[in-house]
Image 1 (tube, rainbow, N blue to C red):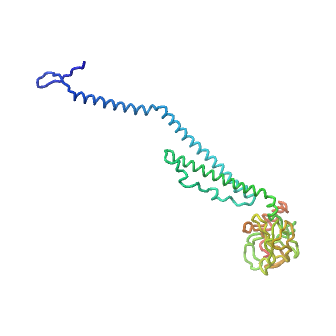
Image 2 (cartoon, helix red, strand yellow):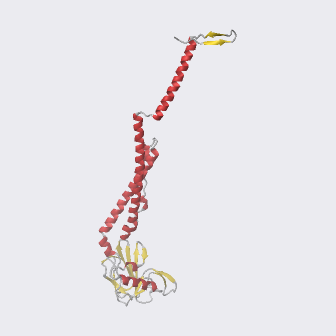
Image 3 (tube, rainbow, N blue to C red):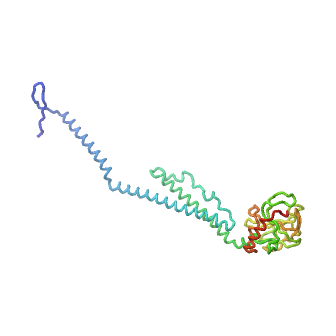
Length: 323
């Protein structure tokens, strides 16, 4: 039975019974319903915050696991990149230099990995940025490894032809000079014997009597036979392949013809005094990839290490060239 409610009437100074109509009961019920809904909503929010349903909890654990795997994958990529950089350094500065090869082109190692459309299927997710960056790092690493593989293939081919290359490199003295007394002027700045000014001397001068035999310093093909009243005079150029050439100047007589194949140690001509020369001698040059280099660095087949050091000292002490 519902409890009766009263209110005090200040006019009559009596408590009077309160009467409720349908409208009062309706709004009262509505207030209770609203309060219930608010309390229920608060309960749902609190429950969702502290208690997850099994499916949500599973997905949350999976997201956390995937993020940890992406971090682990990036750590592994860091390690592989360091390993790739070490391989590249040894490739360019050790393996390729052994065979006189140029470093592998940098633009081939760092080729592009495609445009933005390459990763369009990875966009639109909360973790898209991190996944796309990881994918780019993997693609760059793959590109680097492909380039490194091509470089090693080149080195392998160079190694297979090593015997031929070693026979072709200019590696002996062009005249008989066991006592090293014939080396008169070295590579570098020297006083020109005619102009009496310092000029770059691009080869080695060997003094010898006219008619002394001149030898090919490596296997190759006679590229040029020429004769001039000045400059090199009667001279021969041998193309040894592998980027090497050698030049023999001021000959008295040439014993080969253009296009002829020659072997190391074969007589190609005789010492003379032709062209711009102040006395009988052989001017000898080595050209590597179009650049004239010090021939003394290539005499390793017919002298001892002690003789090699002696030869370098003699060449350095010569102040005036013969041409």
